[in-house]
Length: 205
Image 1 (cartoon, rainbow, N blue to C red):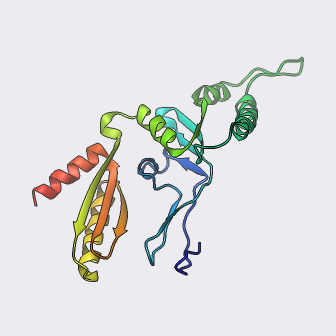
Image 2: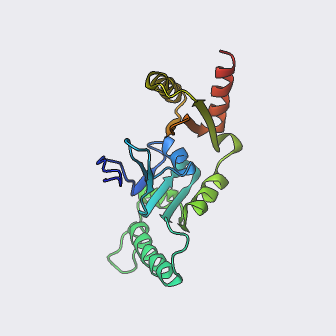
Image 3: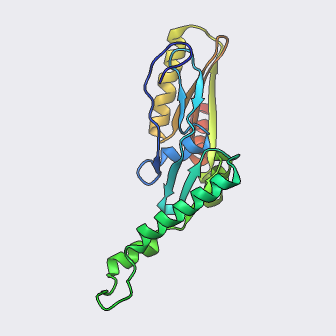
C-alpha cells in the first residue's frame, strides 16, 4: 500500500475470517480494525472496502459482510441472489439427489450439512457488530484498556508498547497504537473477562 505521505508498506487484507482458528480476529472486527491499514510512518488509517466472510462455528455464526451499509437496493439483490446460489450449491452437494442412480447420503456428510450454520448477509460493519454481540455472553464481548503517556521520548513510548504487547500476548488480546505528537496511546482489546483481569493485574502493581 502507498500512503499519501509517500510511505510504502504491506498490510494483510482478510477475505475470510475464521474465528475458530484465530479467536483474536473476533475482537479486531469488533474494534473496527479489520481490513484497516495503518501507515507506520505517519499513523494515517485507511479502511479497505473489501467484502469478506466471517465464520465463528462455536457460536454457529456464518456471515457474508459487505462493508457498505449504503449499498443500493439493486446491488443488494444481486449480491443476495448470487450468494444464495453459491450457498445452496456448496451445502446441497451432500444432499441426496432424486433419480435411480442417486445413493443414500453418508452419515458424515449429513453431520457436516447439519453443522453448517445458515448464511447471513450483512451490509456495513455496524450490522456485523450487532450480529457478533448477539452471539456472545457479556464476558465474551469487547473490552478495551488504554495505556497513555504524554512523553515524546521514543524510548519511553517503545517501552510502554513492549509491555502492552507482552501483556496482550499472555491474555490473548490485541494491541493497537495511536501515535500523536502530544500523546501516545496503546490500546489493548479483547474479551471483557480478560481485559478485566488485566486491569486488576495492573492495579496491584
